[in-house]
Amino acid sequence: MKLIACKDYKEMSKKAAKEILELVHSEKRCTLGLATGSTPEGVYKALVEDFNKGETSYKQVSSVNLDEYVGLTKDNPNSYHHYMKSNLFQHIDLPENQQLIPNGVANDLEVECREYEKTIAELGGVDLQLLGIGHNGHIGFNEPRTPFSSRTHVVDLAEKTRKANARFFSDITEVPAQAITMGIETIMESKKILLLISGKSKAEALSKLINGPIDESFPASILKNHPNVTIMADEEAMSLLEEEAVGRQHIL
Ligand code: F6R
Image (cartoon, rainbow, N blue to C red; front, side):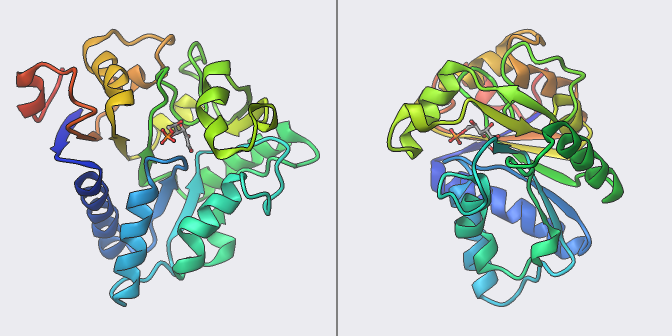
């Protein structure tokens, strides 16, 4: 894994957007793996700013999102469909039929998961997967003890995750109990992974990722086995790391 130290959230977001744009400019037909939550908002803002300068087109790009809540329709303001539309899709020229997000209101969720895997495979896999990390080390909605061999599946959300995400809802009782998420193995098949970690509240997760063992109790730890992972973290997130780890480009 490569760790890129960033001063703050803004710098991290700009650097991550630059990496995505380099791919979109060099491989017009690429597949981007996208994430939701607070962490990538700055990246999407930077991508929209770049798009408005008229130098980038996403017409041949496809996107696949990591996850979606079960039971929320596309137009529900808390759905990830809605998040992606308002933060990115409505501002750029990525065709709607190339914006793929699991359908959390599908009649048969198991079929939906299998179809999602098939779609990713048909696209030739994800070229660059953007990830955030949960306080408990989750990636996508793969909570602690999800098998590393998991594919896209329906997951029961951990109480800690529902509490963390309650800030987007008017009440915690409104946070869905389940989600569809790409599996850990699905994520690991991405050609490149860009993990963003920002803020003091994520410092423990970053330190655990770097210093802890590879174990299903901390899902993100599997990323150490991936050949092409870049972590971009800001100073607050790195506050629990040893000085020398911060300067290091390669950890492990
Ligand atoms: C979102 C996702 C989650 C988030 C994680 C961090 O699509 O898959 O794993 O990346 O929960 O969320 P934030 O960025 O809100 O702290």
